[in-house]
Image (cartoon, rainbow, N blue to C red; front, side, top):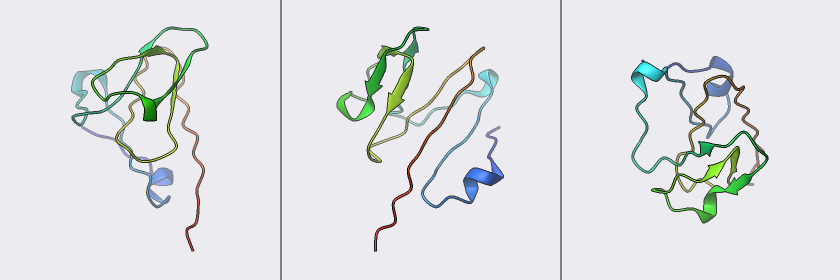
Length: 86
């Protein structure tokens, strides 16, 4: 079952979903990292979607594809900047 946040649903263009480990279904081409418990950050726009970079954070400047955060005992953080196109 996919869980949705009522707060995130209010933000246009923010697609999201929360899964449990027993039901982890990621869309094909989803990028996620192999967590290293370090300080390495990866530019998701520069990675192929079939790679699993060793890192602790991913960032993207656009909407090239899905990015997943998979955690066990760490707090996932999502930051975004909303841009109004007039």
